[in-house]
Length: 569
Image (cartoon, rainbow, N blue to C red):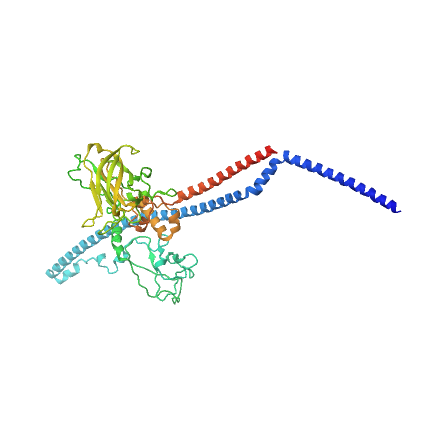
């Protein structure tokens, strides 16, 4: 019995080992088939699967984020453009309406004046007729009294007729629709302008017949102040207040007594705006080319020429940075701001200059027009007594006879900028008359020495005066230029993010549109090349292109690596 069991166990063991060997063989066979199938048929499927699941997730996420950002930016830009278009349309309509009102007022005044003169003349005739009647009455009998004519009553004598009936054209300058705003920074604290939230103070400027009770400007201060930026400079004739609808008793909290103040310095502009509603040229603009009276040394025999500052940024002059010394205004990574030295202003700011650390720096300027140079001048930022260190002390001026300045011709040498008893800020250096200097378009300044003998030389304002046969174009300020300045001023004070990111507000735009009177802060802070909607869009497109290019490069590298590995197998 025991032997039988042992024999049976041995047979089962043998049978089990045989099945195990068969299973192992089949498993190896299946594995070989899978490996063979994978290496021949599914290599591309595995590669695509691995690329998409492991390597393309980050790229897809970045692309999706960029698409969402572009979509959001497009929506905000569209809304901003619609708002600007709405403001421009309303302002244009209002300006035309205002001019129409002024013309109507003038015509009505003329008509009223003629009416008054006719009434006075008629009154004189009535008085003359009265005298004749009295004389007839004294010389005639009592029976003739009944035959006298009745003196006609003149409408001018009617007490009911007054100037209040004169149809005057008036407007509400505190209307939100016309462009008026509440200056919350100069008003009392209000419930409509919370610390966290949006400013809703403009409810008080909505011109409606029945103001709602829950839309008002409210303040908890004892004697609150409300400051309003009017939509237009006006001659104020009256103010009014209207509360939400009430009957019998004025609601608690409604204003009872109030005073109205105005800024006295606006009176002259108001009177000018009323007398002449058209936009006049600003003859006191600091950017108008200065006139130089040449002496006998540098005078030209031709009197049919005009003198201009050909190195003015507004007229089109630029700094040729590629042929100038290395400057702090033209960094390796960043925007070129070298044009500060070409802004023609009476008081150059101290932080807006062309600066170089070279020992004898060179500044090359492409002039706005071809001229016959008669003099150059330099002006540093405002100083008194002692010229600041780093200011140019001695310099030479040379003319470029070709575009690349390979051929130079000296115009004047050893020009000096020094301290004077009268603290003269702009100092001239005359250029002797030369017939060969009839057409100069590019000039170089070679600075030989600076004040204080310091490392850095900084030039603030350079002017090149010359003669040209072209008449200087001085255009009148257009309505579009006025709208541009108004929009930039409003965005600077109320929408700083929009002003800094999207608006075109470089120095050329501000000075050429004469915006410095309306917004002097804008001109003081302006850049030669600013950040605007064009640079934002260009940066976004550059980022998208860079991401796509990097993705394509890495994909090609991955394909090459996969192909090389497959060939090795």
